[in-house]
Length: 493
Image 1 (cartoon, rainbow, N blue to C red):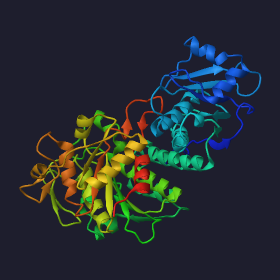
Image 2 (image 1 turned 90 degrees about the vertical axis):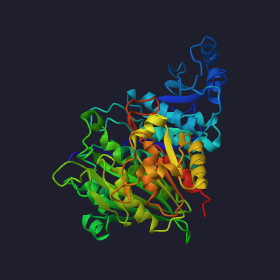
Image 3 (image 1 turned 90 degrees about the horizontal axis):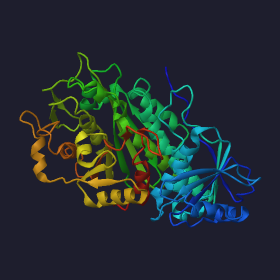
Image 4 (image 1 turned 120 degrees about the horizontal axis):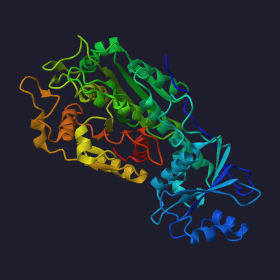
């Protein structure tokens, strides 16, 4: 079976000496005001004012995201100097992450053996792990099946001014983001429900995460008829993946729930070809749960966390579930199907029900759920909907710290009427186009009971059509950083 190579990654180390290091590139920062970092100041003194002359002449300007690669005039030390523009604003975790990712992508046009990164002196220590994580995240690309790699990863990246603790934490977070991105970027012939579960099992094989996989027979026995209905039209049978991490003693767990539709044809409500092309990304919610659980376990967070991934492939055959069908879910609530392309919420209906039976103290679900959320918020902002403002505030705070934009949408009671069915308890779409992201969340709310819950619609930011200086097109790994931060800091009782 077609399968890509392992995720590319550089060896990373901390280093104390900079200019004595024989390296391919030395990376240093410059503010927009022309303020030289200590490394640039040393280079300037050694070269008779070379750096300041370039600044005064406007050759290097320090604008945010501006990357200037120069040949070093010195006979020893680094052969090249990459100057990273730091702008004039606050240097926070997000700017550190972006800078780390940009420098790796900028240098990826050719193979480089050793890159020394002296940006630690420009960012506060609280952002150093984000700098390392960004550099590791910059190593992953969309072109995982090209004969010649489009991006060449440095063999070694040496970080100056960064503690060993920040280095290790950054490596874990960067690797976790890349695990999510790789799962999403793989083609649907490689990642389908069974193989998704197998890849997750392999990932956690020697970790503290306990993996449980429900196959088709177990799903039948458990009454997961909603998951089974969505997957009925495919030759690839559904799965439910449960990931348990016990780091918090006897406390009740936090739950992370992900939509894992590994390919979405739309079913009998068939998508047009253009709308189907990227539908391998419809399992990004589940992939985000896997990535977050990877980071939580590797960091050894003092929390109990359980991840749930509902996995199905929405295809077309004589066995496909149909418009007008009524499905009795695991919880006993019945769903009338008005559109087979609104399948993610149907899969989540059973997945959320399994999750609440583990009595979590709070629960977050992630899903590439609605185009309506993209219409409302654009392609780079995740939508938040909740039944508990305290938990939602915690998610927002975590996302704000990590620089991942989110926005809360209302959950007014008036939307409850929009998903009521004349035939069953509820229907799987609202009334027309209006408020589609909210009516989808209102549908899900039927399956969360009294558990404090936040729904995160990542339809926009989970998968990008175009590249940015800090990342390739394709999967982004959005919300992995924020979820790890939330689990670490949550005060929910």
